[in-house]
Length: 163
Image (cartoon, rainbow, N blue to C red; front, top):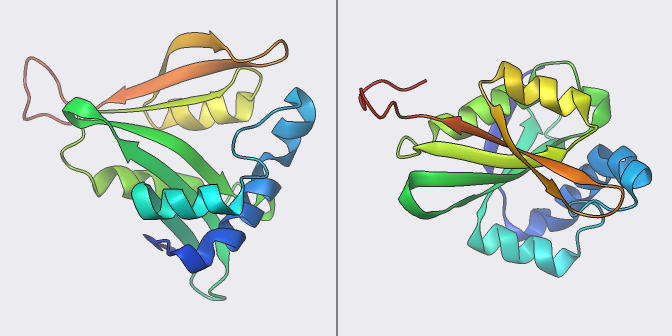
């Protein structure tokens, strides 16, 4: 499936919320909590205005089928808050292409970080195949522990080499 990744605009807020609700429904059911599930419209609009928010669009239909939300932190560190793809588009390379494209758009990145639920084995496999490594665990609630992943982009010995 051919997709394009372009900046989201405030008018996309409801469509992005719908994408995330579809993508994170199972997590919400399993853990009773998921920060990106049922995101308030005002919060989504704020993120579109203040963060890095990209929509993943199917070229043949112009349908928004996914989104990415990230923030630049200090020292070239980027935090990936969300990568969401509507489940019927899973296993088609959409997420892999989207995340790889996002990473390439920020050549100043020294490291990307993210968190994902401890029992989301599918997510673990996805991030690990793209070079992310688990570095910590954080208890979010009685039912949910988040695994923190990171992917360094700069070798401290040979800064010119990127992963």
